Image 1 (tube, rainbow, N blue to C red):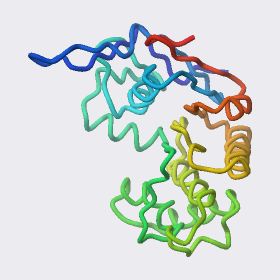
Image 2 (image 1 turned 45 degrees about the vertical axis):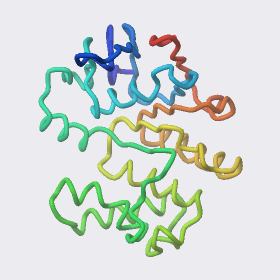
Image 3 (image 1 turned 180 degrees about the horizontal axis):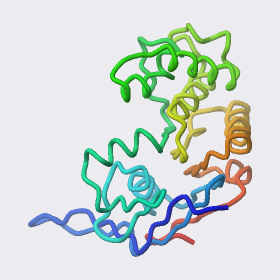
Image 4 (image 1 turned 30 degrees about the vertical axis):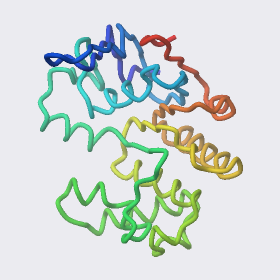
Length: 226
């Protein structure tokens, strides 16, 4: 498999201002992800998992080190270029689905494409419908987000993450608020998409059972990846 992204000697330090205590969260972390990987990101609270996901998702810049994805050095990119790169190549799924409550399932799914294009298009609606069919929500497309169950909301969130056909999906505790049955269904869906579309998934989790469904486990400890 080809390399999708690589970070080298990644350092992230908080509290660098005058009078602030300095805390180094990432301490020379190295990590490579290949195209089509399904990986679990493990580690105790405070180990740096969320910071790493934020950097990989271009939501935060490291203090130092290299971050290369799809051959582009993202540590040298400006905010505008990072936003464009993120919208085109990276999807996000969070523990709290962050759906827009006054929008339908379909409207939530196509929202990233509408933002990118500056308007809602017929092509985006067609893809949104296709994605909702694939995640088993054909009969719930026109339901408001508030009318969906927790598991259904998370499936909408996964469809939304896939809307712009990203190469990488970063998932931060995507099953953390779900019961075991719903969590199992969500992970089965992720595995199916990973297998069929070769989308790379990096899933942060505290749940060993969820991690066992992934083909690779990456542990973050003391600011480094093992």
